[in-house]
Length: 286
Ligand SMILES: O=P(O)(O)O[C@H]1O[C@H](CO)[C@@H](O)[C@H]1O
Image (cartoon, rainbow, N blue to C red; front, top):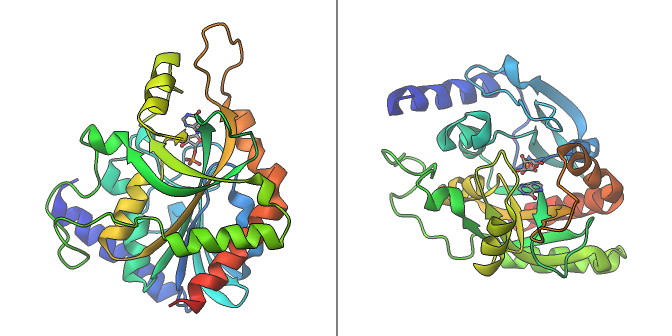
């Protein structure tokens, strides 16, 4: 898609939402694989199936329900993507981040991004919640970066900084919430690595990703964060650790999307609490 078409699609999709929903969201949320239940926290829901929104991509990945939901979490107006778009689905990085740019145009200042990821850090266990402190964007390093191409000057600068891409104050606050709510033994912190997928990693790739400093790997999030920072939004993100990446050739276990899709549900209570508290905190800090 050329730049002008992309731009006009972005503004038309946003206008459709402005014309059809009265809620003015302040916080944007993205639900990753198996995390669609986070929308249970949203009151007074207005639901747009993705196919009902002009120019909006559709979700093709199992565990991504494909609804854009407006409503309130603890009284704070939010817009939530119940399912995201991945590069491996055939979407360009720019198409994957269209919803982030719409969030900005709708007046959103803070985004909460979630995903399912495989552990590379040997200390991590399945069901841990990794607070993302930074990322290594393998997909971006390979040249697939949503900020490539003509810069959208109205949204942000040509050369955006990525210092504190993930808000350190919100990470600290998430730890406090976990203490208070008795799930701190499920919390870890680390660097997320974004690969293209759709295949899971070979044993040699797992070793390489670990060596470069990645704690958990997935096929999303980094391009969303780049885009959010490009347009000056504050980001908090977490991974639910759904599998342990395998680097031993004798290990007969293998990652399975069905299983990966089911893990977040086992930490539903903690995750819903965390999301509600972070949304409240984001609202207070605006
Ligand atoms: O990152 P999310 O969307 O949570 O999904 C993760 O789970 C899928 C693989 O099982 C991939 O799409 C990977 O990125």
